[in-house]
Length: 204
Ligand SMILES: N[C@@H](CCC(=O)N[C@@H](CS)C(=O)NCC(=O)O)C(=O)O
Image 1 (cartoon, protein in one colour):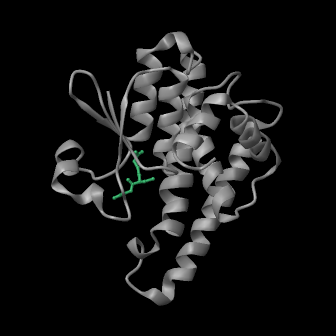
Image 2 (tube, rainbow, N blue to C red):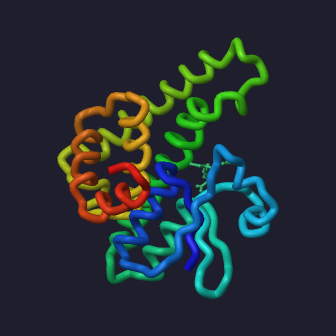
């Protein structure tokens, strides 16, 4: 498989899942600041110009974090990256979608790509502030979900890989994590695969 990724981005969550599954893959770094994702070669693979993209062994490209994570969990069920019962699986998808769609998609994007939300530079601070509010509310919700648990459901799942990358971003830009998210982040950092992935991405 070919994995298109950017170090320290949302693709880190998929990178963790690929390595948890011990799958062979070739990693291709897409340099977002340099605009690699907008070049014709990459658009031919993923016309949405986003990372992550996973090109499977049959040559087909899969995009969107949740779809890639779900496909990996279903395709390689032995690793139990989802509970495997309808209720448990729905809880995993519920949490993962909230993290990717809301914390990342509505919160962090306002902080990282502020200019996409307003043409007026004078509004930038207000957009960033709103982003931080959405992220803070998101972590408060995830914090309640984690109370009394090591992971989002009973054991490590694809949703934890999603939560990890937004916690990692919080760490990098100085957003304080609430208690259970902080413990979850530390628990994730203690996983050998997470340590290896961060090393490979140039962070350790
Ligand atoms: N909904 C997409 C969002 C992915 C996304 O926004 N990735 C960012 C990097 S973390 C990106 O590709 N940004 C470049 C762009 O949107 O053009 C997914 O779940 O994969």
